[in-house]
Amino acid sequence: MINIVIVEDMILLRDALTNTINGQEDMRVVGSAANADDAPALCRELAPDLALIDVVTDGKANGLAAAAHIRREMPDVKIVIMTALPEITFMETARKAGVHSFIYKDSESEYLLFVLRSTMKGKGTYPGPSDEAIARARFTGSEMAVIRLVCKGKDRQEIAETLDITESRVKQHFAALLDKTGFDSITKFSVYAVTHGFIVSDHSD
Image (cartoon, rainbow, N blue to C red; front, side, top):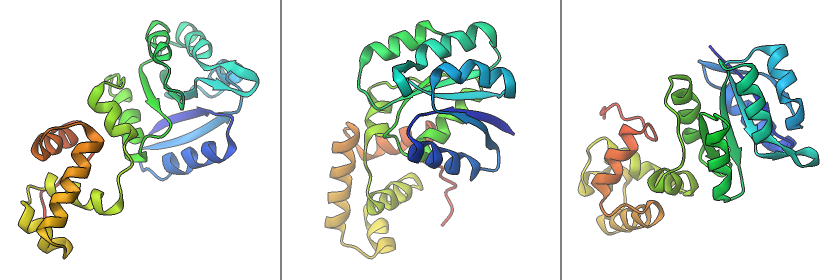
């Protein structure tokens, strides 16, 4: 079980993160705080496996400074920093502070869970060109259905039959997916999505 603390001042977001994490069989939220200044004490008290910390919280408290404090005092605690601000200097500061992973708040929940699990396995994740594009993409329900079928190896005709839509509509979904992610082929995107854990494919019908 992965024990997690959340440091986030927006109550609705903190509750949503808590519900998402607690809905998983392998992780749970053991505590939370609204102010980053309280993060080190919270970690000392609860000894979590991982801390999910916002860059800026109540009173403009610095989540990156809190992360650096935790890394110095409790090096076994994994740190994932999150932000809604597209500020490139945050990532560089996070790396210098020893933060393991970095994620944007508008990421899909599947991507968040992937980052949390991979961080616990020792694989740090920072947004690169493809990671960031996928993390920021807003896929529709229909697009997600198409992605999953592509990742199962279905061709355009099979996808159209499965979803009861035209092949022309499938082509439109392909174009939208490539536009949102920056890939130049649906095959490259599907391989990336599966190998990086964005989509879990069991290749079953």
